[in-house]
Image (cartoon, one colour):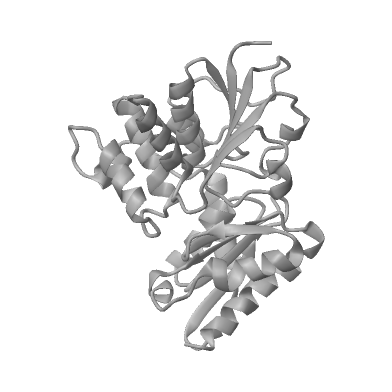
Length: 305
């Protein structure tokens, strides 16, 4: 057994997952990073030469640290590993997966997993350095949909991470050169093309199915005009949802009014924020039904406006 830890992201990692993995490695020191299956363009840009694994190693590690996911469907092969496992995540957890863990830090109220790792770094007195600070800023920035769903804690974390030679947040993020991968761009465009659009009492609700990038795609639908969007991946057993600020300001809550009631009915887990949330563990055979129920719940609320 190696004395190193193995830090694992979900497949097709986003900026938050990659930033979290790099930050955890800074804390632990002796560790490898596994990005399951493959590296996309954005991942290579953020890693900036950092060597990572793309397949499960044969050797046994002292510990596995899962970052930015708490559902085994997001990381094929994780359940077969015998090592001790801990999770750091801000998504609603899979209850069965929690039973397999030796520890976890899960806060669905956080804007990103990077924020949770930053909390740990501060408590331990670990200095990330200028390069990692910018990577962590990118993780927070992109997972809060360019700060559109950012809470006070997210903004404070960004301010704390800002290098001393700071310019402004937008310039700092642009220095990362983080550009969505081609496959993510195509997923967004296809969702816009295929989206089912419904109107209820002045509220535009869009829904679509994709194979991956459901969170980013849901955000894209609200950016181009939808007031509420639901995008699901049958393969990932996940539905992501987004809502524009004007509708959440009127009291709409994606978790309370839409996702939680549907999740309880179908044995899924749901969590997140008023304007950005997700449901995990959606049964593939009920995927269309669950997605439709999300839309119907949103329409019921809109009728009360």
